[in-house]
Image (tube, rainbow, N blue to C red; front, top):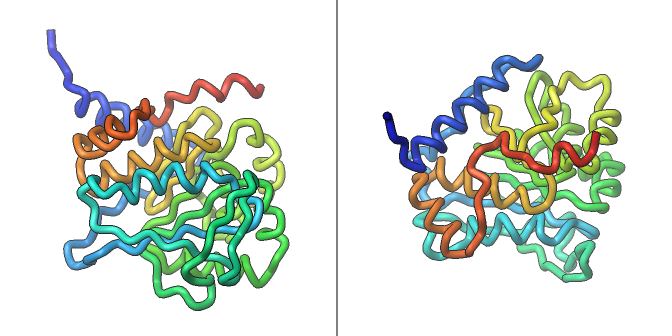
Length: 244
């Protein structure tokens, strides 16, 4: 009998997820880009705004900002202004940059939360977000942050996922866009984009990205250290069936 270690199982699960995307209505745009050898410190720009979901932001930042994760990265909060933003959980976060004055961010991050409505209703903000996504090497969304990414118009022909409680609403609101929304997915990787399901799923997606940036073993070590049970299989989504 052939035995597989945890890394092999992770690679098999990722391959199945890729195959699923290839069989879907949208074409698959290739694997997640590796870190260029000459990049130096990765600049992560986390877009924050009033009424953003707190765990959408802090969960992935726990992974990306961990001092023991063997990743050369700098985490930057980016706002629409330099004023502190009040998250949906009444915690204040202070931006380092604004969307208009921030340097180029290698990894651009968009959380969800009730505050996305104000973001999506602002032509100016959406124009700035679109520019940030275009110039990024990688883009990640958590929860309904995927709706913001969808509205940029850059996701034509791509596979995405989002929060399962809001899934149908997000799909309905994106009608007319050529996006393949995948319901049973903890996260979806398509080219440079990683979109995750709701809230805590952002940590699974962040660990996946960390594994791509460094190694599976390194991501597993971070998961163990923060005592988080990592959903390594992108299709292992126990919440998809809760919302028919």
